[in-house]
Every structure is written in C-alpha cells, then in structure tokens.
Length: 218
Image (cartoon, rainbow, N blue to C red; front, top):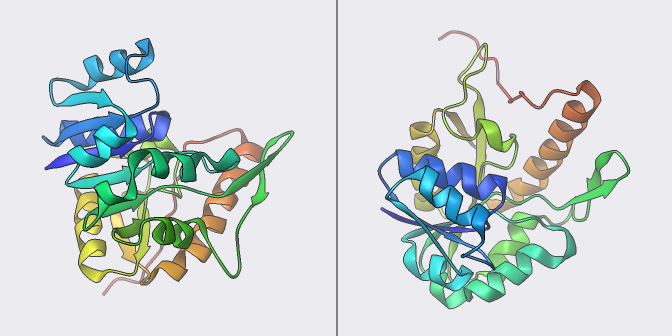
C-alpha cells in the first residue's frame, strides 16, 4: 500500500519508518522536503521511503496519516497545504492532540467536552474517512512496542466502521491490542487520555509508558 504521512516530526517519522518496515511505500509530507534531517530519515528508512510536499504526500497515499502538532494552527495549515480534495475517499489516521502547554510541558486541551481535534479534522476533511489512533502513546513506542506486560492497548475511534477496521488491522500489525470505541465523538475521551499520559510521563520523568486494559480470563 502507498502511505502518505502529513507531518515530518517524531510521530510522522516513527510511523513512516514502521510502514516502510512492513513493506509499504511511504512519502513523508513536509514544508521542506530537501531539509537534511528529512533526507537523512528517508535514507535510514530505506528504499520504500521518500519525502515531498504535503500535497505530494496526500496525492501519493492510498491511506494517509495526519501527524502534526495542533498548536498554532499547524494541523489546519497542513491540511490546507495537502488540499482536502487529495484525500477524498481515503482513510486518514489522525494522531493529533489539541494540547496546550505551560512551563513544564502539556498543561491542558484547547478542545474538549463538546468537541475534539478528531471531530475538527473530520470537518476539515469532509470527503475522507478519519480514524483517531496512535494519539495516546509516545512516538518511540508506536511501532512494535516492547514493554513489560505487553502488548499494550491502542484505542481507536471514527465514524466509518470499515475505516476503523482498516486502522485496527494496521495497529495489530504494528504490535498492538486494539480497542475500538466507536464513533469520532470518542475522541473527546481519547484526547484527554493523551493529556493524562503526558502528565504522568512528565511527573515521573519516564516516557516509556503505554496503556493496558486488564481483562478477566475467558
């Protein structure tokens, strides 16, 4: 499958590398595709990895991943640069969190209770099938996480059931147990869960964390 990654930060690079390792062709979308850090990533990720503009990545991908910061309008700007028409009909994995920051790091959410980043992204991409996933874990553990007591839990949500199944299959391939919580209003729960993750990580000084549901044996 061809994967377009919108965003070239740690999350985009981590997921892009994971997709490349799984044999997919990956194009990382960024404002500066010729930047040395981006070309170095493409070299390390292997022959199936390349970089281009946001629009290049959106056109290229049969499936797209939105991996941008929320603050400062970064996510909305990336979508505009990608051109929503290039994502029509496609599954878009939304990894974003509407975090606000204080002196010690993540401090709150810019959206919540009656709205979410996931719902906003779906409104910005009315022709796409958006699924929230990979937003509740540090980028270093997004692909094949190795933690005591694992495999950990990946929570997903989105309004299109078939799109959620596609993303669930990807998450399982990436080493996760999947819990599908239904429609995109579930992002109102998952994004605060990401904030809680950040608070615990900052307070403990340890980002080697992931969520796990404990279930009785059947």
